[in-house]
Image: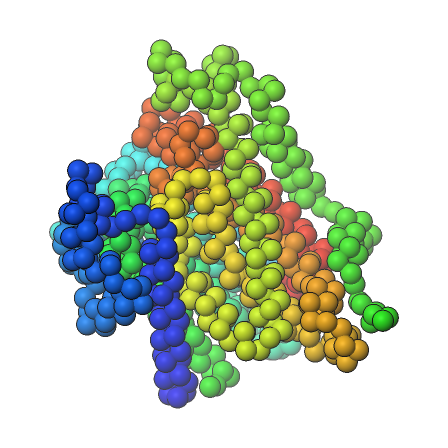
Length: 313
Length: 294
């Protein structure tokens, strides 16, 4: 078990190294010159050249790459070309809203999706089952921002239950935080719920056909115990896996949802950086999100043996 | 040199999909999906023949009109007819969807065949694919479009790159399963050339999963295009696409919700029917999966 964890953690290193290489090449090989952005439109050729020299853009590509990696390993994410502030500071200022939004979304999604999937599988081919399946197909077919605007129209404009947009800090205004965070979380949760409910249903259907479920029922175990202790626990591994791979969807969704609801998180930060071609911020953000994704999936892989003791490494 | 008998050729798989087996009863869902999809495609393709207004004709006196007899869906912030724009917008959105699906499948097929067959290449290719999959698709795509210009080609490339690893994994897994089959071993023993083995013996196995995967990619590409345009990193705003129309409408959403609602509805109906067709294709082409899920 311990050896397995060490092996998996070591396995992260080549993946992240290649991610760094891909991100680096992506930004260097596409047209566009960071020096020109920094210098502005009125810069002379000599000024451009000086800036290029100071940013190290005249060095050979491999040297630029290794310099960047060395900085990263020292914890230096670089400096924004636009605002001239430290990228790690920029992230630090903007990460809280995103984490709060993501955590709230995951909690809502799992609490909604798992029971939906379990009940759909339990009442297979009933109207509940068809309802859950319809919802999960719909969830995949409507763009996140359209869902966001529909929610705004219904709950903020027509019913006036919550404010339209914005963000409040939970430490300063807990009620205001929930009022403003509930619509974005529900918006983000839609596709995640669709994904998890679908997988829960498929996985439960398979398990409910097993002999030990029939045995449990035959000896008179109560139905909710059969469903949640006997069946769900055995169906849990594929559900955990999909929560992990679906995390990529969540990250993409965060980027869009923060735009719709005007939330000052790192998703907005990234989009603004990309549109302004702020190279150091783009590099850092893509690397950071990829790192979080890899880490989440690593933790989920390791946790399999906790849920299902049959899995040994 | 006589070739070894193959289990199924690519053509047979396609024909098998078209002539539905008797035991598989076609539900009402797929039929509706086909009709809706055909209607949307026809509406988009023949839009220039019937739309009441030029989709890019602006009119400062007609800004943000509600829907009326003259303007079925109302008008946008520039006074352009929303109905004409929405049906015309389908052209580019569908083109991007289909284009991305074809390119992703072809590139993924080529890389996947090599990866599944050559062990040395496999190790390297799969590490690169794992890394690509770790980068959130939307971020990778907006970065690619923002940095390489808002053309239709760069949007298709930007959508394709994050999809390729998934196709590669699929093709590779099929090839890994098939390469141990006796007919492949026999082909190797008979001295068939490597390209011939890959193309004639291994490729046909990947066709049916690829048809299914390609359908899903088409749906998700249309969705991604909309998100890219919405975030300001899509096709140039002069060309109407469903995403562009919604992106322009978001500021005026509270004045005329139809600016988001109508293109959103068209787009969602389109993706919904493509996804349903994908599910149907999967059930027909891969009965094993159906048994497990049903």
